[in-house]
Image 1 (tube, rainbow, N blue to C red):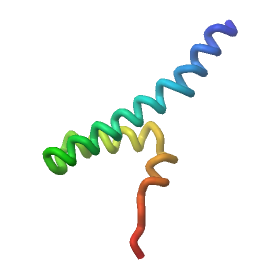
Image 2 (image 1 turned 90 degrees about the vertical axis):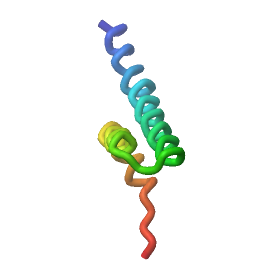
Image 3 (image 1 turned 45 degrees about the vertical axis):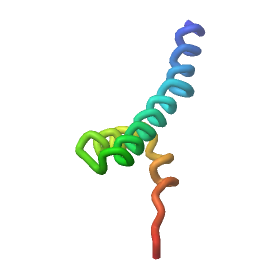
Image 4 (image 1 turned 135 degrees about the horizontal axis):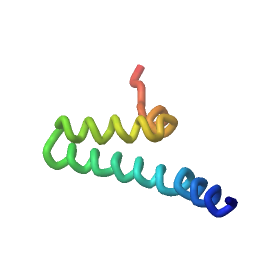
Amino acid sequence: MIQKQIGRWAIMAVAVPLAAAGARRLSHTLEARRGPSGVSRLLSRGADLIRPQRAKRRRRRFW
């Protein structure tokens, strides 16, 4: 029972943030090479859904 809880914690603490970071990085790489596209926006939006706190910190307002 404790092993399942440790496994769940490891997934939530390690795997999910890594997946969000990977999706965000892939999105930025695709946009840099080919320009904005539906796939890059989908990757960014997916990363924002997984880690919304990270998305709020990255947005900059210029006013």
